[in-house]
Image 1 (tube, one colour):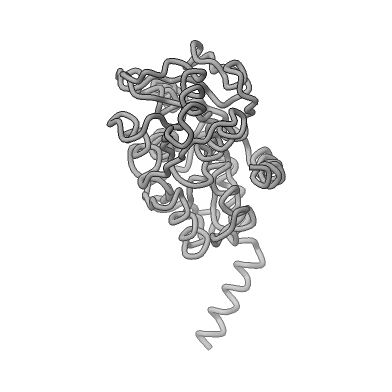
Image 2: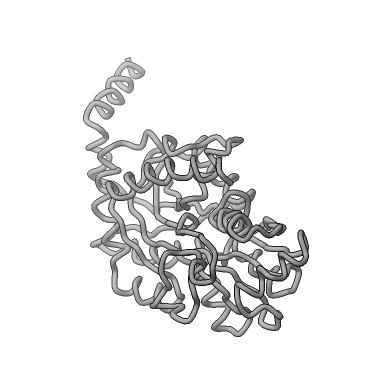
Length: 321
């Protein structure tokens, strides 16, 4: 009899779309899994955009960041797609084009169908960086060296088929020069350290990480892989097109929050209503600006459309590269 009552209760909860559960949700802290190491752009920004989660006009409960780095994000997103609870208490940060490009190339357990987007908080272009004492001062200098020394120009990045890698492939194709892309363990933070330490001649990284590193006097930024200059943070840095390279904005890193497939719709609806409010908080905006992190808040419908467009576009782009 107890088993029958439990079964009927579960059936009723599923039939009502989890409405009863959502009414009390969340009643404890919520976790956000970040597929990259502490200190990188995704981790740095995720901690800022969730810092007001406990406010009554947000979730009313704190958010705890859990890092699961490895293989350019594959380790974390594989875990999230296959093992995370779909009760609303397990969210994850997504990175596009990263997880979409990786699913297109194969060898992972996720795709856009594995997750439900909630909202987007930022759009972070890829940039090319060199150490502060590098002999390269422009993208033209870097390309000229690569053409004169095939295979000698080393570029660090956060992993395979992440925005950094896509930008590197585009630079190589557009310039006609042979370069060596080196994916680092530990994401963007490790890729940045490789440039500063002189382990590589150059690197592709996030604008936000590069902005902070340049402010500290550690790197020079040669070019940005976007359609326009970033007037807010890097008005003096030319786009790749300005530097003579036919490169678009395919590697711009969109970041936001998602939940696993199967999360009750009532909980998704509640998150969709409250998470963008959290992102738009004035304290969050101030901290993001201070950290050189471009914001781009998008709602669930806009993110769904972006995912769909990026998936179709990247399929053709990666085939060409």
